[in-house]
Length: 217
Image 1 (tube, helix red, strand yellow):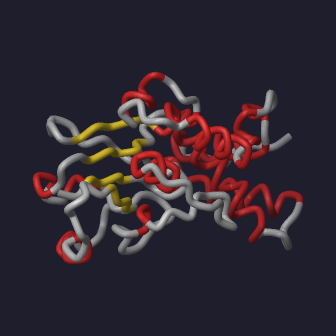
Image 2 (image 1 turned 30 degrees about the horizontal axis):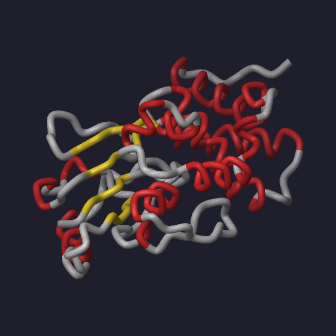
């Protein structure tokens, strides 16, 4: 049977597929890991979390996989509406905490959005960033009470906590994480929590939660 890793974009799907399969794929142009396995179950994407998708289409795609070797594959689909008994193990990268959402937003902001916003500056860039960050307030939720499902918060992956090592079943990961941390160095700087990405995420959260515009001095 297949093993499944479910994750919203920019939450280490490629990294985890590499660790779980014992591979070491190249770094992609977008700051992620170009793992073939982490793309097998993808049938689309969304700027928030992928809840609205055709589960039958997903199952048809993965049914074409050779399952003899207990293969790990990745998908952006949130697995709550999938027949999870059809899989051996399911690892879900969740973003329910503030930390996880911030880390995810910072990665996509640095690796994807800033390179595409080169024509923006000043308040235009701030506005664009703040409005886009609102998409990343929506959490990728855990699936509970399923014996073959393990949930791990994205922040635990970034910070390599005991929860992370438990999620990967204590597989060898030192080289994988060293390279990943080098590519995502900005998450580990002293001033990360005062960075532009974090500030604009906070502003986005305030506007959504309080229902008013953020006030600049």
